[in-house]
Length: 287
Image 1 (cartoon, rainbow, N blue to C red):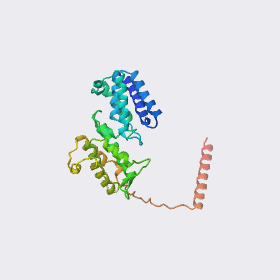
Image 2: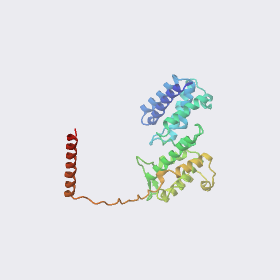
Image 3: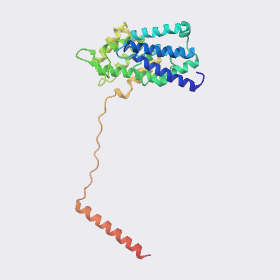
Image 4: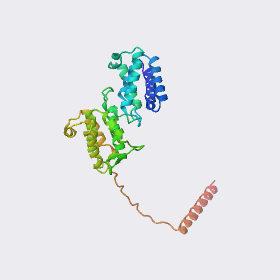
């Protein structure tokens, strides 16, 4: 882990393991296979690499749409117990990352956030280094979540319907519960700032009530002071071109030009041909 090449190779392994966790809840066989892969990595890797893996799995749960986060964290606790059996201690797993370990975690984010915008827990992350790039990534996650809510929102029932490109009511509520209070408020503030042509006021009201139902004081939604990073994310979301109303394209009339008749075209073609023949004869005679 002490060279860029080693860190890059480790990130590739961590990315594959993180992706594989998505299927752990499909069957008992999948559960056992996924746990086996994680345990095999732990048995054949140094303690620092295992610690980074565990922290990434905890900070960025790769949850399938049919899996609740509660079930995922139960699986992760099973993996933790396996690590303790292998000789790892609670203190080791909970220690803050060293500079090398932090670089691996940040490289993992570079590789995977953007490919998987549904990792909403990244909004919470103090675990990963904050930067202009991280604020931009977080704004893309908020944008994706709002887009999926818009796709699934049914104004007749004031609910979110199951949709391959959207998000179900249960998934949305599960995602909200996984977020810190200020991040839930951030989602509403960002949605509130969008153009009304994009953001249906019924959907906005739905988002507000959903967030209040996560035991947030209704007054806090409009009065809570967001952090500097959260304010940047809010502005990035509101300013995103996706949410701007489509401008009607201006039409420009080209100046009309007279169209030659077929006879006029034929005349000029014969005249040019005669000129070319005469020029060739003149050149040949002058030799």
